[in-house]
Length: 349
Image (cartoon, rainbow, N blue to C red; front, side, top):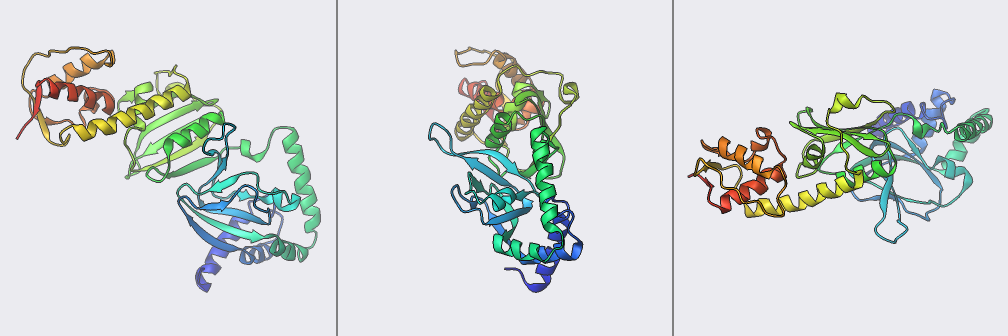
């Protein structure tokens, strides 16, 4: 529970947000403040449920900060998956408040969320004191119906989704955007706010990607290898210039590309357990590469090995070499493992 002073401040912030929501946009400020004060504010942490499928629709929720996943069960009975994200400033459950239909989905917190909750009886008590509010509701529902018929519901408008990488399961976020056939840009920023990668989605397909010096499929898989620091943001957009993101088009189907990224992430984790500390210096023991390709090698692995041997003519850390080669971290450490095993590079004292 919030103390009186803080509650008053939060109520004023809620009033400002409510003024932008169609359910309350024509209500005068003093009445909006009454509505804001009638509700309760709660902070939910990662994994907590706002409501579950089948719960009664006797409340409306306003997301003040953070994000809420709308989660539904799959037809094959596997674990429920996110189908949509609620972002700050959006109401949840306002239509069901009037229809009385039970919740049809779960609402889960992926990171953290501050939510304002108003019960049905509290809403009705305040609404009765607002002159002409019934007419406003009738007008609002008429407008919504018109927008529905013409496929112009509010969810087609530009939205933003953001959060800390360490709290979100990014493959799930990307899969949700793919399944929803989204058009937009997914950007990744480090702890200093500098963008280090972007992914462009076009009708649910992964169209372009860059990460550091990498472009295309290698760039996409690099994003999901082991980064868990920094933040991400997703901005929907109907028209974008692909070449402004990258001049390398991605042909692999989005779901296959995501699966490949996750396979590489799993293998990289195993590689890093087996390799010596990549932050220690390594040096080539010979000036001539002896490369024996295996059936598991990628076509570019020999070129990566040549570049690593050249760079390690003088002692260097393995970490960061991929920015000079360039190649993904996965390719770098897999090639380095082969070179260490064959005695062509070794850790210096």
